[in-house]
Structure formats: structure tokens, C-alpha cells
Image (cartoon, rainbow, N blue to C red; front, side, top):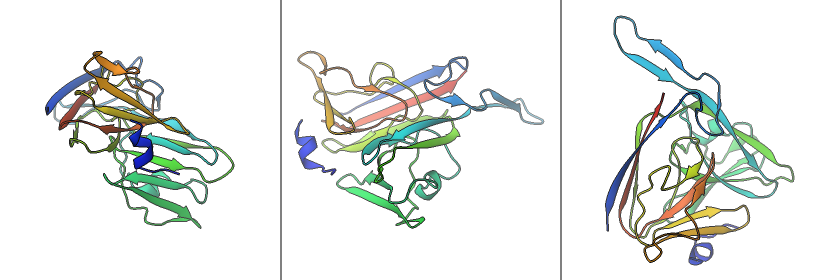
Length: 232
């Protein structure tokens, strides 16, 4: 059962802009590219667009919670569209900022289904069956400048804007402040990473993220995290 108090109890305002350029030959770690380099020129202009469309898979273990994120751009990112083929009784569980908000798929319909999860938002998938299933996310790679704002002392459930793997601060520019917490879900318990100025650095290590990861952030001050993504 997910709770907000017990797992989290285990455990100066600033802005950082981080720009990432991704080579098309390597594309995104773990992302299977369907149409890499769809380069088109618009008629009667010198404007070009480079669209990269792909997918990635998230395995949802039997009778377990999986903390994940939508990291691709779709025309429609509502629950009822993203999760149209999940097993009966599957739950998508978002975070309001103060409580969990579950949406259950039962009898072929969602309780609500209109909640949207855009790149940058995290959520849990609860597989209530005895069989693992794979959730496939399909869409366009987000090549915009994206921003997440964090409020001091408040938990926020987020994910990267793109399907990549690496270290949260070193590779993706998270604007760490003294004693900020990053909280990940292992599949059975929460794992907490603290930015400790006395080390200085992360304890027990800098938070690693993999493709499809969602995670909680609890900053000790207001933070603005901005990333610009360009595929070359």
C-alpha cells in the first residue's frame, strides 16, 4: 500500500538551465526509434523540422506498483488513451501535491480517464493481476525547452521529459540545493537520495535514472529546473 507519511519519513531559491544535444546515431538511450530523422522542408520557406518518433516499454510486475513517467509527446495524453489496453483492475495513481489520486480501469472503462500525463509528470501503475504486463509508450521526442517548478518543502512527482538514462544532476542538470531529497521506488520500498553539503554531494550516491523512471522531488527551497533538448 502506498502512503505519503511513512516512506517519506525515512528520510535558497535558484534556477538552472540545462541544454542537451543528442546525436541521431545514438538517439535516446533505450528508445527504439521508429522514424529517426524525419527531416522535411516546408514549401516556400527555409524552415526545416526534425521529428523523431519512437517508443519505449515499461514492465509492470504482477501485483506490484511501478513508478514511471510518460516521456514522449502524444496528440492525446489522457489516461484513457495512453492506457487503452491494460488488464482489468489496473490503476493509474497520480500525486496531487498532498495525496495520491487513483484511477481504476474496470469492466473496460476508467473511473475518470480524462487526466493527462504530459512529459515531466510521474505516476504509479498498479498491476492488480497475477501476470506481468508491458506498457508501451509511443510518441514524438520532446525537443522543446521544458521547465519544472518546485515549491520548498513540498513533494512533487515527476520524470524526465525524454526517455534517457543517466545521473540526475550530472547528465540532466537537476538544480540541487542543500538537503534536497530525491525519492525513488524500488518496486517494494522507497529509496531516498539526499544532497548533503557536508560531503559535499549526494548520499548515498547521485540519483540514477533509467528510461521511463518517475521519482519524487522534495526541495528545501524553491527550484526551477529547465532543460532544452535537441536531436542532431
